[in-house]
Length: 181
Image 1: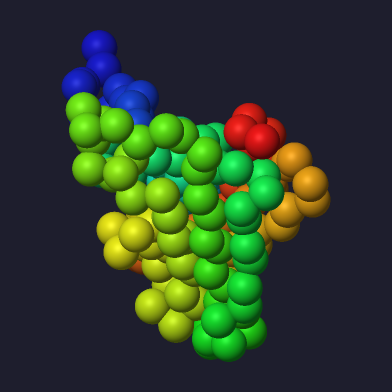
Image 2: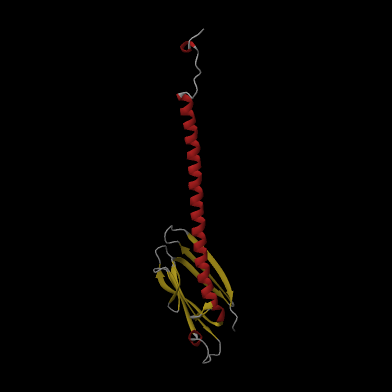
């Protein structure tokens, strides 16, 4: 009979080399997964920031075109009483300031809101303050560039908004046909 000590024993487990190879493979997979997660996070933040800029610029253009309870919009303007004037203000990135003054041809009555009793509206892009204002009310901020063009019956406008945290910029443009003669 054989003693227990002389019987061959099977060794269960992994060698040091196998453990190190498995750890190296797991580390490479983990780094790849981490990099992929980081890339998707940056992409999500970029898209979210871009969408915020587009939304802010779109809302500003909507306020200018259609107005608010405080003031009437550009769609009410008379095409014969619209004037675009450069202000001489220049922003850090070389954007030029401008002012648009327009009137409407509505017959003003006593029951109209106060904003309609003012026949003149003033839209001002100040590149130094990076704001767009209408009759002194801020319509948009963080505006790094803007344009306004006008030819006969159609007014065009574009705003380039910069996100205050990430610095990402987005441009939104629109055109408006002036209805009043």
